Image (cartoon, rainbow, N blue to C red; front, side):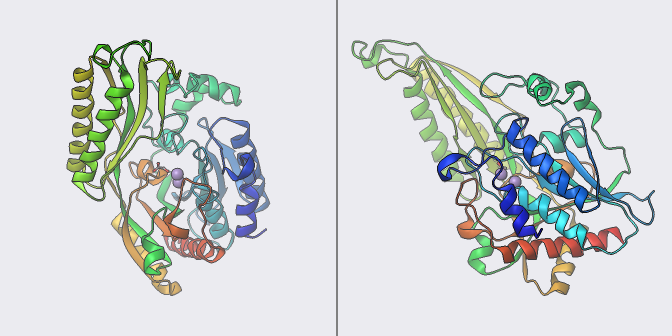
Length: 400
Ligand code: GLV
Ligand code: MN
Ligand code: MN
């Protein structure tokens, strides 16, 4: 099966009805089906497969020197709710395509499909953080939006939660990590450039802000007698958006989920929980954005007589990619006749976690309209093939 045929086949797993895109959340039957399918393809390609305690799937091809550190190459199989067919999937299937065309090489090569990159259900980059020994102290107690702790979700998916902490790679096991991904932004398409080499991944802070007010009758409670959690949140969000606008590109702030309690049309909202996702390429600017957002929520809470619970995760600082690997990618692109651009990734990737323990770099290919995290996400067969070819050439150089 070609890379394109595999991408289209994988896109049917977890497809929501009526063209609403994919939902492959971690530790669900849809994710299990995707992992089983990819595992079968890996084995058909002659890779030796294993799954670790985080649910990461590996497919290994030995090198002529089996003791040499391996080149790791891959991405993730989970999607956001309503996601597209290329985010993550191209990096895993493209890695398999790249490896399938390689001659015998000194180093082993491992293809990896990481668990829970997206973080829609549990804190993001779970699989790649597990590989690098960077788990949160309370990782297994983290709950999904329905309140299910990670340990229960893992057990329900047939994984042993106690094994999560044992996934860290032995020092010296890997020499380098390469990840192919759609750009998820408009730069490559707009400039007609077939490849991007990621020099840096923007830092991110995410978490929840909860405003706790008081439920009251919507018809009888005068505006000046309410502790309306949403009224406070509305003002706070406007001020936080203004802070991001004021900082200018590449600062971004997103509230992607807002939950109201009790959620009745004729009841003043007693509580609002909203997610915040803030990003920038520089840590100082990211700090300023996060501080401005916090100040906006604190001021709005005070003004409306509601309480604020501010729960931000430590987040990830802006992460530089390895300059030597970027040079290898650029030389490989030149030899293949693929013009390329050096760029910053606004999106988060497993490479940012992996870069803690080994040199890491990424290849981007254009996607239509720069659209991603939507069912409209699309990368052409040619773009996908270019990415796999560039990845193959880079892996060949790294593994020789
Ligand atoms: C991962 O896709 C992210 O949210 O950047
Ligand atoms: Mn992705
Ligand atoms: Mn994504």
